[in-house]
Image 1 (cartoon, rainbow, N blue to C red):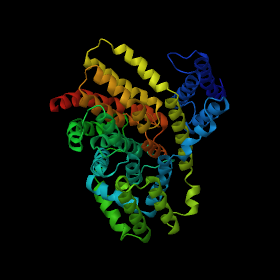
Image 2: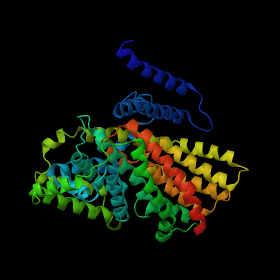
Image 3: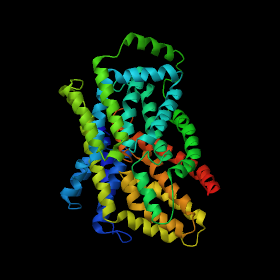
Image 4: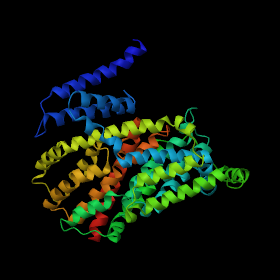
Length: 467
């Protein structure tokens, strides 16, 4: 069998699966169009997971079919391209390139290696620790990924791990995956670390469940710290870097810093822009500033000062690719929720909970809430669509209100790595080339399973003891 036929074989099989599902009468109270959109979305996920098509190709085909077959209106299909948080991802990605190009990213990474660089595992822990420390001041995990990404990129390069020369698994792949996974627990540790956290608290408040900044931190700290201890170690075992022990790295980093000399003009400009962006991002909730506008403003200054030139756009094709596939999947996922598919599935599932003890209801609700994130491209959309439903069902079955609310809120954060599109943060790390969409499904899924077990087995009795 020729290579061309072998390549077409999985495509044909996937097409047959999609056609069969498309022609199957929709179950429950799901409308025909919602069922057709689910077929398109599920087929897209399988194509990416099975490495049948690249994520950009699968997304573009899904968009074309959705519009041409009248499943969704064109204006709604293209709505994702105008979402500010998606545009922020692209701007932050381009600014990250400037941080690397100017040399500032290299300088920051060398300082980290100098202090924590005795092993790749140590670097992984240092990245998540940095994220946890800055998280309370950043009500956006996307903004934090824009801060962390250039540092991780610089660390990978300084470890001799680059994309394109078969050295990405030397250290870069592990560091990218670890940093991306770390965002899922840092976002759940602090009430202010994720924009959607206060939204969930507000919904819980309407049901008589009161959660404060202090109580949130108290409930989160034990399971989060245990997850922090386990995530870098687990990825080190199942997704190991080729470079492990680096006893000479701190001394070499010190020598490299001395060789770099004083901070250059471009580094000063980039540092000033970077710090200004961090400040405005941190204060965005208080001042009502649009985070995407902050990112574009910073990019504009870097372009005006020639730190980031027009020619740099030509070398950043991944930014455009990320914009396209993420905007498409976000729009399809949003429409799937608006058509009532998620609500119908959730309502039907609750019928099977009648007669079960509150503990079983609690476990099953959290498990389904996590798994259904395969169909969401936004943590915010997920929470807005299902948080209230799941919370009401859980409380109605006798689950303590604060326990149910907190675990759903934690799950909204720790389920983010379950898919490449599970969070806007993932798009930035995926665009690096160090990790593939399929690897995020596999190893990101493993991280999600680990954090689910940690929060359920350790977090549950911890919260109950505090109530």
